[in-house]
Image (cartoon, rainbow, N blue to C red; front, side):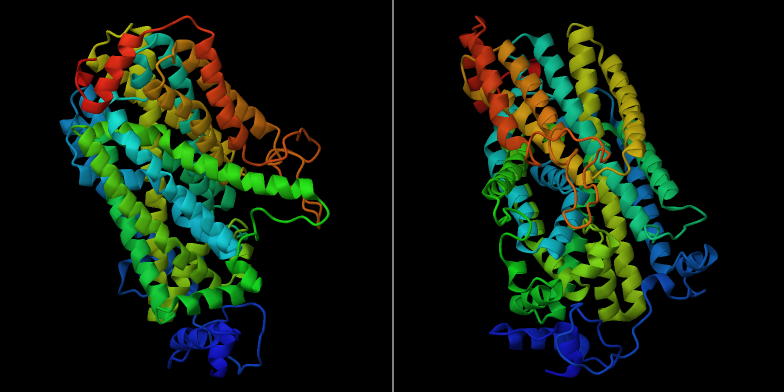
Length: 632
């Protein structure tokens, strides 16, 4: 192994030595500048590396390229990569606004606004489901966790993908028994007003938590991408001002998409985003693997060496299920916490409102099931690429450097894109690839929040206004008008909450949304479909019980208070250090909240004399055939 290769990849003992030498030598032994060390720990004396290429953010602008000129005109702190990012983001926004205008012209009634006219094919809906599900947390967060936590970070990919194995058998049943919202399912065989109110409460709660998380994440992402997290400025704005501006801009675009385009605009937005996300992820994955000669051992060996954890980086236990010496209780809770997280990810997906309403955009139950089959293929392909991105970031960028930029690891993919672009095509490649990844990340946020806004506004208009306030007899124009107004209100509320919650952990809010969906929504869906004695009181107790348990356990968890860094004593919880209400030892409440939600639903049903076996029988027939669903 050459000195340059040793400096870049480090020595790896055992069978991985030659593999790492081949993979890293392919990267470093080029006529141009040598690659920077993948590991921050020196492993062998090496010759001084060649002069490092300037970063994408400091490359002088070229007058021949309009985007380069834009970068120079906006100031030295705004480089070529940032100009490309703004250009690609603006292009995406213009295209999606054009789609929204076109969708507005063909959106005439409730079916068009809520379900896109039920005219999408299974392939189109599969792409839209993929776009709905793959949020910024998937694109940036999982790869970031892998780059910092190794194997334990990859567990998120497994959980998110495994969830679709439960969605598959439910897709046709949900499509055949509902029209626009989750509440259509229990309302068929129970007291419509009471169950619709309960379902509206849970739907809006889940969507708002998820919305705020996405918007907070968008603000934080832009601050990091523009170099504002370490005291920099952009157009005279600091990090907090830029984050606030991005949150407001995202909120305005979200309102425009939903108010004017409805489900048609949201669906095409998801399709465009899914294609862009899969293409960008595939391109970056191929480039990373090419740098390691398409040898997985070289990639994993380099990642383990550069992480500073050695072989432990590739084994369970670095983040989850940690063994605490001398504290068996803490060790047990760590293992249970991992189980609780997996439960929320798998079960929560089945009951996410913005996923459920997408089954209503296809003509029938068969198309809904077929669309989920296609989604599983695309989502599976995406999550198979996340280890290459995560371990590639650890090997080429270095875990310490990633953690220094953002302790949560959300900047791992942008930093990897910049590094891979520099190694393959020099500064210009770094600028373009970083801009592409950044633009796709922001497009991901926009697409997901549009669907969340549509799901919550549909529930308010269709369930609360149409069936409670108007007793199930509203005019279509009235209901659609209320849906558009609701989208505006929800967007405004989400913007205000996100601005005030900028310092909160976005992952905490996402986890809370999944836990609420699993504890409050899932019992209603499953028991309505499969239990004859389930009734109105069971729905109410299940929704309110699961929702209350999740929020209470989260409030009493170490996420909210009572957690400090054992070395520095720094407060790691959401609430100030002087507030300590921690009574629940786990960060993820699903392990207790989900069984509690089911128990409340069962007990409530058993304590109520309400019975309607005929409606249950009809629901079972309808769920299998779709007969009569459009009449309600």
